[in-house]
Image 1 (cartoon, helix red, strand yellow):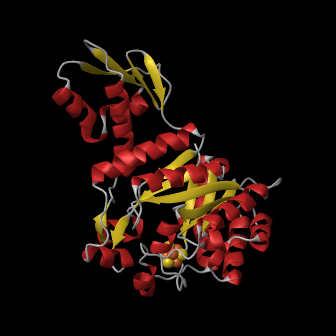
Image 2: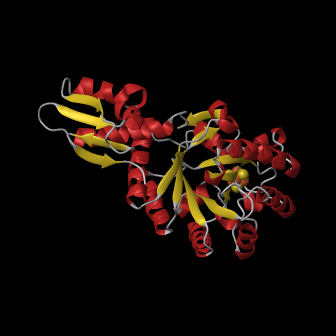
Length: 340
Ligand code: SF4
């Protein structure tokens, strides 16, 4: 089981103006941690990891946006501090460093620096692969920049992660699936799928208030994300996150959109429900999962049990079966796996 020690590095003073980002309006409230503070945080995490014996499975993750666009001296200072705690021949340490950044903030020199300090995974905020959507949301780069950056990251031997947003201004379900297919062609190892949260102080908020930006319904967004998840998994891309974290005040600052504290669980519940529904036979149907996946089988807040009780009364029985592999559902003995 892999875990992260997360270090949030806000991009204070970011020159970009992405439609969904409230960095400009909140930057006065944010301070970037000093290198010394980060070193101290890592030291504490190191001690806890050493005690638990979990260092080898843990990565140091710098998150918060465009890591390679922050001041270079500060960036190398942070990487140097992280590097002190990495696994070496004579030192039992963390297994690597992951960072996230913008596609247009990757070049050969940057990749060389990241390699030198022991970065293992790079996540790119692609957001969309449709140029009209990228322009409408003021991303400041096009889809070709994503392809190019992905190619360079893979060629340099890093693990590649991509992030896409669902429900951006001017996007459509077709464009979400187009983005998914184009990202798969970039051969990522992992993906994060972030349905949009419309935050206070953003361009999206203004467009939404004027009625120019109309969002999908919540259920439609769940259905789209379920389809995307299936497509990514079928292509062997691991989904490491679905839905925004409550951190960064997203839960408090969201005026519309799809923030839900358990969005990933809601999507998985929907996927399980659809598998069961499409494979129902006449008579009574037995649906099983091992203990660890029973909550997905029953659904978020038992929504699947409620759905089948209402629509197919007495015809669907939910059973725990610990002999089944994890993240697997059996419908009348036929197995369906979730995840990569
Ligand atoms: S999302 Fe856009 S505006 Fe916000 S910090 Fe990242 S690059 Fe800057």
